Amino acid sequence: MTTLATQIAQRIHALRYEDITQDALTWTASAFVDTVGVTLAGIQEDGPRILLKVPGIAAAPGPALILGTTRRTSVLDAALVNGTASHALDYDDVAGSMGGHPSAMLVPALIPLGESLGSSGRDLVLAYVAGFETECRIARGVHHHHYDKGWHPTATLGIFGTTAAAARLLRLSVDQTAIALGMAASFAAGLKANFGTMTKPLHVGHGIRDGLFAALMAQQGFTANPAAFEHKQGFLDVFNGPGTYDTARILDAWYDPFECGGAGDPGLKPYPCCGSTHPSIGRMIDLAQRHDLHPDRVARITVLPHARRLPHTNNPDPRAPLAAKFSMQYCVARALTDRAVKLSHFEGDAPFDPTVRTLMQRLDARPHPDMPEDWGTEIIVETTDGNRFASRLDDYPSRGPAGDPMTHAELWTKFADCAERSLPRASLSAAFDTLMGIAALPSIGDLTTLLQPDRARAA
Image (cartoon, rainbow, N blue to C red; front, top):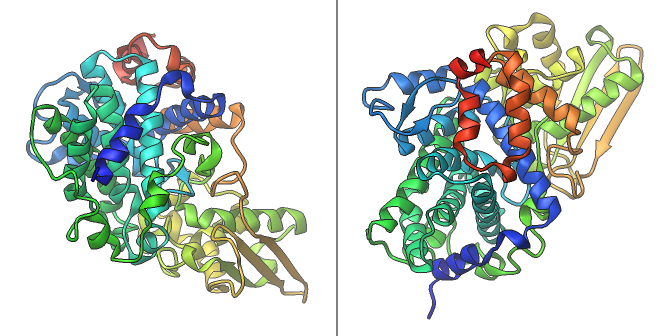
């Protein structure tokens, strides 16, 4: 009987560039822009900086750029550092079907590998789409039990996307890819218990390094069990448990339609914090703007998201900027006080702003009693003069958990805001345009020369 990994590998290798829809190509270009942008911002955060201080990390010379720096190192170490940076701000894209962040597990892996191979932008696009499909299709077979159990799907499922994308870029055979997936099943890791700490983005860096490692080892003839998914002591039974997954959903209808073309509910984040807070932030901003709400006018706020959105965000007293990103209370209070949620709201002493803290004490977050869709939420505000205002959103239908798709101008604004933390603003337009045209790029090296500060200043 053909193993599950082999059947997945067959689907990974069945995709041709000519089969990719325009919607999927449009998303892919936006995802490269967005992921590189948040990586250029994230590389300045404490987590990646500490990682680079660890003896041996990125110490060896190599072909792969650590984005936003002049430092080049091995493919695996560049993937580790860039991957950690891509998720350091929790500002990277999301996909509803995956229950996590798909592109952070793909773009920081593909750029250094593509540099080392001399790959074209078209090569990277094909590999990206195959990887995105893989992580989302596996997710469809294991959710919501996998998510609710406490695994961090970005890492535990995203590693298979990394491995799939690397397999396409390396031109592995179907059998080699099945072996790489079996190896990745042993490497998969990531616990929600570490949300709100530097370890959450490290899940991403470590996961994409291991996903690449699995593909490179399989290329050299290393072995693993291609039945590592369905084995009685394999990934599905160990991570989920018997009776909590559906392999038919994993294998069904690949690329029809494309997960990254809209079927997987992909979305770019407008706010630099946990995606589970986004619907509530949006509703709070809506109420504040429509009813001219200000903290001194608010007696009480009730936040009622779907129950799945609270276990990792119900934190009424975040004591650090990273923890504030996973505090429904802080994010919603900040949305009312500022009518926006920005990068600066998660820096320095911002989470201890006295006005926001006072408002948080008047905010109650609990699961909605009858919300049908897991990206829905309802906000109720009671004012000091006895008024009551409510805003409810049952779901983000066909738009992903981040909400409405970003316009070209909005994507540029986010990219520039993030990227100028590592590069001079005068150089950002060329990088943005190159990323938007990723599919036409003759060599990925033409991109990375724009993503290091020395070349940027000379431009």
